[in-house]
Amino acid sequence: MTFQEINDKIVLLAAQKGGQGVSFKFAFPTGIIVVTGDGQVTNENLDTDCTIATSEDTFTSILNGELNSMMAVMTGKVKISGDMTVAMKLTNLI
Image (cartoon, rainbow, N blue to C red; front, side, top):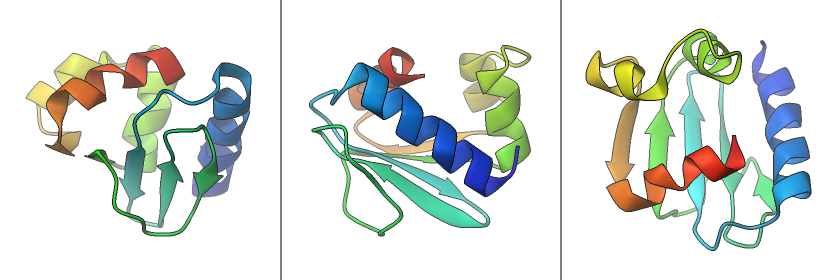
């Protein structure tokens, strides 16, 4: 998936599932996607509770069920900064 396709997918998921009460930042090489606590999505570089940094290819593999998210973190394909308990809520969104 391209950055724009991932952005569109996250907008759709956030609209369907609503806010998680915490904010996430997805940092990709080509851009940033922020999901606010109330479920709004922006590409503005805002402060968030948790930042997930990865490539578009890795994120696509996780979304498609081809790569386990915990394995991606353990192998360094995904880096998480900020509140780790917030990162666990990410499974509710995706």
